[in-house]
Length: 351
Image (cartoon, rainbow, N blue to C red):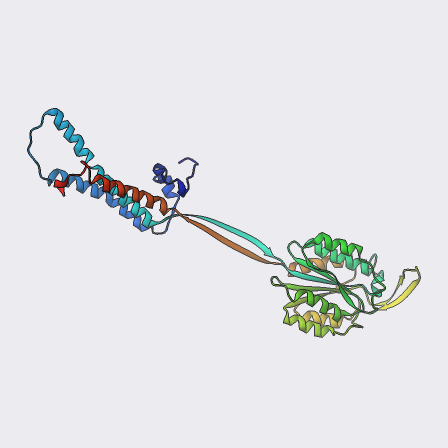
């Protein structure tokens, strides 16, 4: 069979539709019906036997030319029977229901909804992580965004209060630009409102319709302000099926840093590990402590391994029926057979 394939609208190419290669290319809903076609040769054989052995014979003398003409007529009178066999065969093929199926399997990863909650309080200026905790936190967020592919990511920043830097989005370039432009804002209320930051992140996640929900909290301190307690926020996360990963930046102790005027300042920094571990455990997340860039990269890798999008596999089966082709030919054969019965091709004496 050549590479040309005809559609149902081109049903009139009977030689194509009866090509063995075409017939083998079909999927048959009722393949057992096809055995009925094998009865056609048997019917033809019985017809010949009946015609030669049991029909009434009229002993009439014909000359040679007339006898030859009669033999042609005798052969032509098998045309109605052939048309009837064609009709029956086409009908059997219709009942077997030939089809072609176009199956498509697609696979995609269902994205995760992630909110990055970044501490921008005064203590994040400490330089025990080069160049500073704040810059390390920004880079950590950027690296997380860089490694994701199909997730929706939002950013919340907080000190003594919290606000949304970016709602959930797939525009990773926008997120990275916003983080690059982010500065520590002295206009924000001082302090570290971890509970409030979690509450703001929850508001961004709670109405998402698909995908897992994750908050990655990045802070170097303890909850010192805000109206919402971190543990209460964690309990609220359970109601919305949100998991919290906490990353504590820097080492505890007294550290020095320069303020905007270049004045050397000393600040006491103490990470509340107990609270961060607790809210992580409540939501079945994890707590990490980050002391340097190498440590941070390992944390990012761990989160990548833990929070992978669900792989969704879609199966499409587009099935097309081809029985109309053979049904049309069955009608054609039936009409021709019916017409042949009112012509000289039909011998009424044999009925």
